[in-house]
Image (cartoon, rainbow, N blue to C red):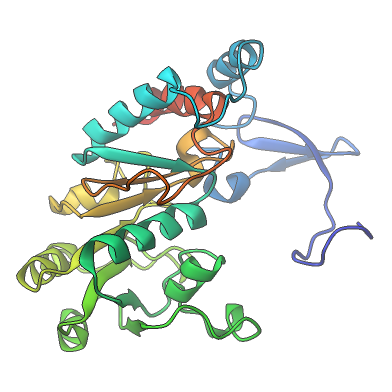
Length: 280
C-alpha cells in the first residue's frame, strides 16, 4: 500500500464475501461484523441485488444529470413516500448528503448559525466536518465553516439555551453512532422538533447510519412520529454501492448544487431494489 495515502490503518486483504462472511486472499473465513461500515445490510453477494447489478451494468451505468433518469425518479418517489418529504437530491455519500443539507439551510433560512450535538458525527468534508464534534478530526484543518456550535445530546434545555434569532438549523443523529450507539430518551426528538418549529428553525435529522430499516422502521425518527425538514441518508441505501440522498420539501434552483455521479442509473436501480428488501 505504499502508493496509497495514509488515511486508514489496515493490514487485512479481503477478496470476497458471501452473506455475513468475508474471505481474505488466503481463503480464511471471517464473520463480518463491520458490514462495509454499515453499508451491506442484506449481506455480501446477495443474489437479488446481484441480479439487478448484472442487468443494469449491461444497460447503462450513468448518462449524467444532464438528462432525465427513470431509475432516479422511481427511487426518489419511493423515498419521498417513505419519509413524508417531497424532494430528493442524490449524491455519492453521507458526507455529501450533509453538505447539500447545509446548503439548503443557508439558502432558505437566510441565517447562519447551525447547532449540532457533542459527540455527533456527520462526515469529514468541510461542511460536514464543521457539524461533526470530535476535535481530533478537526484540529489540522481549521478554520472550518463559521457559526457551528455544539450542545449536549439528549439535553433539551441546553439546546433551548443556544437557540437565538440567527439560528438557521439544528442537525442531529436520531441515534448517535460513532459516539457509541447512544439512544436518546423517549420523546427527546419530538421535543427538538417542537422547539425548532416554535423558533422557526429548520430541523435536520441525519439517518445515514440509522435509516434503511435498521431500527424497525425505515427511518428511526418515525418511532417518535417526528417530521424533520431535511433528512440525510446513505450507507446501506444501495447495499455497499456509493449513494447518498438529501430529502426535503425545500428545493434548489438550477445551478445551486450538483453531482457528476450522484443519482446514476446503476446505483439508483440497486437502491430501489434494496428499498423493497428493507422496508418494514
